[in-house]
Image 1 (cartoon, rainbow, N blue to C red):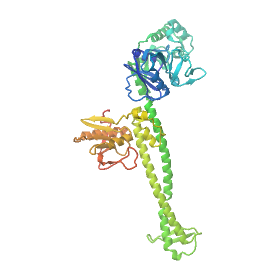
Image 2: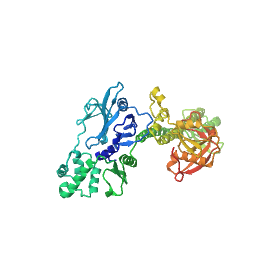
Image 3: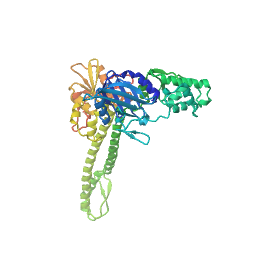
Image 4: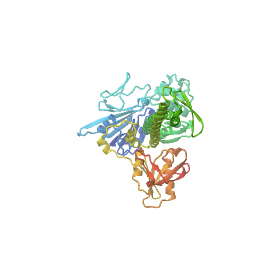
Length: 562
């Protein structure tokens, strides 16, 4: 997603009325995302290297903030302060927010929050009145620039000039001194222009993208006037959006030369671009991190299963040892010499069986050896099969866990897998902060209502167990057959269960299962009293009986949102 100085200028114009409002709370909502909640509106800032941005946001943040040194510093020092000014530095991708208020001791203080949206170098920091850095999100020390505590803040060097300080004549002269094509000359000569924006300017003006000195004077004047108008348009709050093969493209320049475009609010345009590009959110990153760990556990289990299955195949013929021992014992009266082989008739089949012997042992000793091999192999088979059952149950559980993680819709959903991941050995156990544990509240199951019936859908395996355990015996339990998915409970509450309620419960179970992408899903349902959790079973793993099943088609049926 393109996020240059011109786009930032439009966003800040859109959220300019936040000035004068009190900062009520600051949330770090992800690894590199922040939400500033003011009296009447909110601002969301992302420092994601691949898609940094600032937008107006009405995000409803009731969950605890991620506690990092930077988020804690913001909360302790600027919560309750008033935003006196929000502005862009020149036309660069840098925002400055000035705050003023009184601290816990009644002393009046001023702080500035600087957010830089510069790709991999994106950062945010807090300055004091002397422009000294008090706290920085990412410390950066290089030969060109230092961003660290107690160091004075200096903006990054910009290779281009700010249009806000130039006349039309200066703009023209600057372009004429460039040996690049017009679009590259605009991008390199002036601050705030990405390559995409510069190319869109050339396309919108329908000017050939050649070296500026080869353009006619009137065409060059047209370019200079247009660039000036962009720098002076500090009230423009909209961006232009066009849907392309790689997602939605946003631009401060009309995109009519590329096709039919739409003019929308700056923040909404950025949200659409992020969504259409499939940019990874913090929830996605957390989920993928967990799934990678689960996949690693899968590999370990499959490797162990292959090893045990190989061992099991090696003892498959152990029953022959018992037969050989019995045949030798039955013929001891005529087997007096030590030998390497012996041919004996199997009285059950009438066939002659050739048996290899240890010539160092007597026939009786060979028979005892075969009985010993038989007993040892039998014990080994029992142990191997028992171990394989445990491992395959573990595989099924991890498969279920992976599916439930993939269904997580928020950071809170992801966090609630913490204890389950620890128990599964996928995540290291953390020290329990009793105060923090007391403050945290579970989000609870998804709740749906339809035609007077209430449906509960588990968000994770522990919650699957809880809603099933706490359900009444005559409530109805649903689950997609043969594939991982959430438990669904239809609360009967003394009512007569209708076919429509069964259908809706089945649709929910299908939607929150691995079959949601395939369309048709077979779903089993039964009364809760028929659902049992085996002793020692992993979270969310149950058995059920006396069930009925129906096949639902998610491509045809609509399922409401919670």
